[in-house]
Amino acid sequence: MSAPAIPGISVPQLEEFIRAEIPDLLNGPLRVELLSGGRSNLTYRLTDGTTEWVLRRPPLGHVLATAHDMDREYRMLRALHPTDVPVPAPLVIAGPEIIGAPFYIMEFARGAVLREREQLDRISAKSNDLAAGLVDTLARLHRLDPEAVGLGDLGRPQGYLERQLRRWDAQVAASHSRDLPDLVDLGERLAAALPFGRAAALVHGDYRLDNVVVDPQNARVVGVLDWEMATLGDPLTDLASMVIWWDGFRGLDSPVAAVPGDVPGFPTADTLVAQYAELTGCDLSEFGWYLGFAYYKIAAIFEGIHYRTQQGLTVGDGFERLGAMVPALIERGHTAFAEYVGPRPAH
Image 1 (tube, helix red, strand yellow):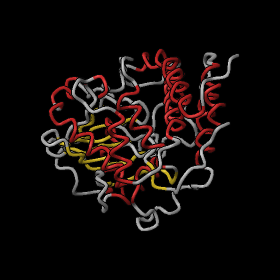
Image 2 (cartoon, helix red, strand yellow; image 1 turned 90 degrees about the horizontal axis):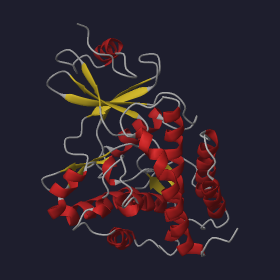
Image 3 (cartoon, helix red, strand yellow; image 1 turned 180 degrees about the vertical axis):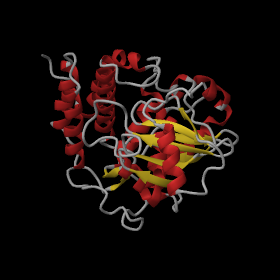
């Protein structure tokens, strides 16, 4: 009986490529498994029966031309691996000629990705250490000198927030399958009240608890994953992303990841923000704008996934539930933004 097909991967072609490019890597037949989780790039576990690795490739079907950049992810891993920001070691990158899409392979970070409520319950006694480690890792990233690690040309910091808004406006337009006037309105309100911004830093672009690997014994962050949106930009966008995923989804029964803010005993998002301010000395007087933007961005991403789900172009469980979350995220975005500029104008 032949092995079951793996969505998005030709295992024989991939094995042939690995044996040619890294001759001593495999000590047995290659086996591939699509990992659960990940609502954007597809992530696979590779093994020869002894050692494990991870492969990343873009999703199937409709994507923005600038999204899902394998070269960028791989470059980030190469630059950061020698630093005190923990990332898996990158091994090899390839174009679309092998499996029909560009991909890269990296080492497997040994630990847990805390995506399920049961995992959070088990680590609750160490929740303060977990929160502190998550914040400390982000502060380390933001303190790095981009030039010193070879990433000084990663992006154009000037106009970063304006470009981010245009990008997610484009995501909303490209993924239109229903009318969401409140989402458009949130984007327009954000554009009309842009902060002045601050000194550029290396930003992850999607920093949150379930994008890191944690040692469950001591709650230490052992690897930061999913660098597809990394660039030079405003570090408070990362802080806002971390906060929204920490407790901004409270009560929404998100299929993406369990919400620490829903778990008794976990510190509040305000605690994380205060720790970041203490570590970096960053001025947070405009943070309400960044929270509103974080909700806008996540709503746009979920709406894009909803669009692909409608076309049957998603792989994995839970996609069909994301579209229903978008209106609540939009409303929370307006609420967070109102704390920065005041209530919404009456229509």
